[in-house]
Image 1 (spheres, one colour):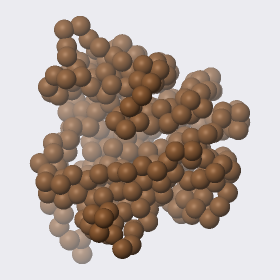
Image 2 (cartoon, helix red, strand yellow):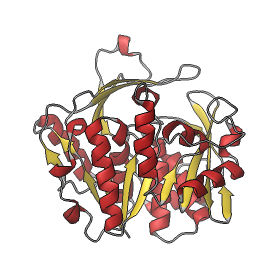
Image 3 (cartoon, rainbow, N blue to C red):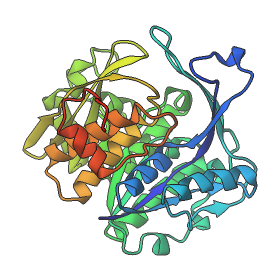
Image 4 (tube, rainbow, N blue to C red):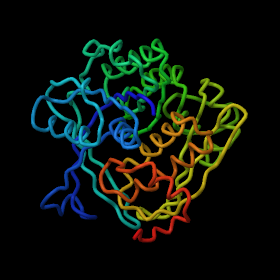
Length: 342
């Protein structure tokens, strides 16, 4: 098993029960999560030693957020306490033809104001195998951009494998697009493993390919072997990994993925999912692939593990994927019919 560090924001998630609208809500379900926190919990559940690095306020909400992570075996000893508030987001779960929607209330959160000098990277990255960060973190604020760049540079200086999930979020890219792309492109230059595809690359990195309309053309060319290999080669990624989601409705999706590496390309098994909660599905996918790489699986096997892990996540309420290795492997070896285990 590996030693892993993730860096990012953990937030309070508030959701109307079931598929109710926010306007209807008389109460809210409470969960905690965030891209890197979700990856941390998944990898900890899969048996790895994982440290989550962040900043949360020194109040009851900060205590609760860290309590959830500790419950699932993520080490929080490098989390800084302070700042004004914990970020919040409101999730309205969709159904059928009505999509899920999110309202963010995260401005001025403790993490968004964090600076790199609040952390000791020499201690954090000692004897660590892998560092994971998402593209959400560097675009939250100028200080988070500096923090993210300092973190990946420190990780590489300590010989740590760097994983970057591009994780495009439209509402975080409404201004200063070129500045954010410049930061993300620099981050990508340090990454060994990247989660995304050519469309994500065009949006987050400003990547382009002559003769290809990646931003407004059809999606299929963005995940073609040719364009995945072009993007992988351009940034020197060891692996470029993308999920492939077919949206039948908000309740039912086709789910697959692909991985590109030097001289190799593989498309995985397709699952038909009836969704309980899709938030955190991409993070579960990333964690599953990273688990495979840490366990020395072939890229194709790591992808199959990632797809099965994320398929299970879609059946679990909340952001976090509460799974075991044996459960994921059982799904990989089954027809996915979900029969009762007696």
